[in-house]
Amino acid sequence: MPPLSATVTGSGPGIVLAHGATGSIDENYARLLPALAAGHTVVAPDYPGSGRTPRAAGPLTLDGLTDAVVDGAVAAGLETFTLVGYSLGTAVAVRTATRYPQHVSGLVLTAGLAVPDRRTDLWLALWQRLLAQDDYTGLALARTLSGWSPGRLRELPHDDLDALLDPCPELVPDGSADQAALVRSLDVRADLPGITVPTLVIATLHDQLVDPAHSRYLAEHIPGAQYTELAAGHVPMHECPEEWERLITGFLAAHGL
Image (cartoon, rainbow, N blue to C red; front, side):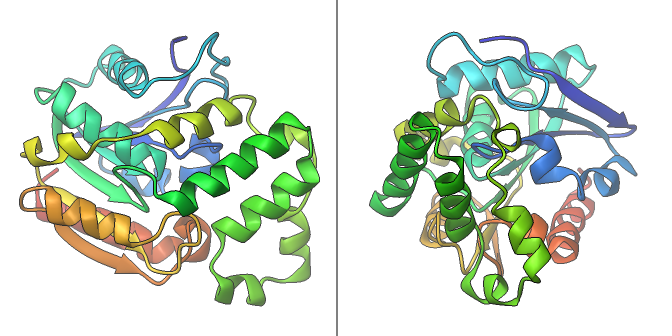
C-alpha cells in the first residue's frame, strides 16, 4: 500500500475525509471541503490510484486502506478526528473506529453499506468488465445511470449530461478497478456494535447503486447512531450539496466535534 497523497487544510478539531470507490477527494468533496476547513483541520487523502496517490501493486484490503488513512492523519498532526465517509468511505470509517478507537471522535456516514447486496455487486461487476475492456463510453453510461437519481437525471441540462458521459480515460482514476473490487469484498457488519462515538448516518433515498436500506442497517446496528435522509441519488455532492453540508456541519456543531 503506497502512502496516500492528501490535502491538508484549515485549523481546529480534526476531520478526515474518506471518499468513494472510483472517485477522489476532488470529485467527492471539493464543494464540502471549504465549509469543513472553516472550523477544522481537514486531512483529505486519495486512495491508491486516485488523485496523486499511485496505484497499489496488489489488491486493496480494507485493513490496509484503513491503516494508510490513519497513518496519513497522524503524520499531518491529528491525534483525534471525526471521519466523514462516503460510499466505500463509510466502511473505511467504520473499520477505523474499531481498529483505531483511540483516534476516532465521531463518524458521519453517507450513502454507505456494511456489506454489498446483489444489486450493488452486479453494478460493480459491470464497471470492472467495462474497465477491463477499456470501454470508457460504457463506463460513463453505467456510472451515470447508477449514480444519479431518476428525477435529477431527467432534469439535467444537456451540457451537464454531455460532461457526465465524456468517455475520456483520463477522467477515470487508475485505481478504479481495484477500488470496485474492494467494495465487492466488504463486510463490516461485525464492527458496528463496537462503535462508541457519536455517529450520523445519512441515507440517499433515490440511490440506484447502494440501496438506502444499507444506511438504515448501519443506523440500526451502530449504538446510538442518528439517522437522516436526503432525497438524492448516490451523488449528494452534486444533487443537493447545500443540504448535505448543513446536515454534516450541524451534526459536528451539535456534538462539539
